[in-house]
Image (tube, rainbow, N blue to C red; front, side, top):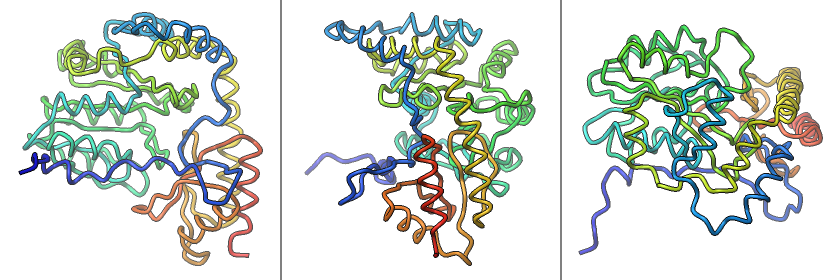
Length: 362
């Protein structure tokens, strides 16, 4: 008799990464994965190359230099930071640490699919809270929470819709959750938000610690604004017991030597950061506006992507997806929402996308 697979694992639909190739197409424009197509900081590249000469050495298990750089940059306490192999690695470990058979894990209906995968991986029941259109609803999250709810994932801004919640709404969620429930603030796109009412969540983490609740943790990534997606560098900020629990099950050498060096250099390169932010600030509204002018239903959001639907009078999302692929352009289909998501690319890539989509149906 063969070994038995845990039944909950059979419920997992493996994560589908953004498509990157098209048969018979030599030059593909990939706008399906929310990568920073401008590329990483030149200083990060230099640091990576310099550190690569030491690849025979194990990394520092604690990523002390990176944790100090993060603490200094964001004015945080270094001992509350834990690094990981991408933030999705840490999101998964948080579920392992706090949920299991008989527990529930709560998140909005249309959000990052890794939350559901993490829930099934530990045998917990994923619970989907209805949204208010394309916006995350705190009220439905609170209505769905109960004594079985051990973890709530909140992507803020939300992927794939781009909607974000102000600090007051996040605090209302924390205050209304059961005391033994951990609120996980996934702030992968925080760098793209320019609103004083918004917070990435570190201050909410600190407030939960000061109150003795210790029930909030924030995760961040170097994959988006800092353009280090290929290196897999993420980090979490939370109470000692949360960081300690996840640290017990995290791989001891989670961040490689060159990845840590590149992340530290990217964090310090303010010029590159500002250039990426300025590019996105210019192109996101331009893409959204032109999509609206063409008749598509666009959700107003933030991040490095646009989220939109095809009106029935124009056709279907599958027809549009096929049309774009015939022009060598790949974007991300979101079938449950009958929608599509396109990453903001380089100026040339954005122009090519807009030109191709303008010919849809003609």
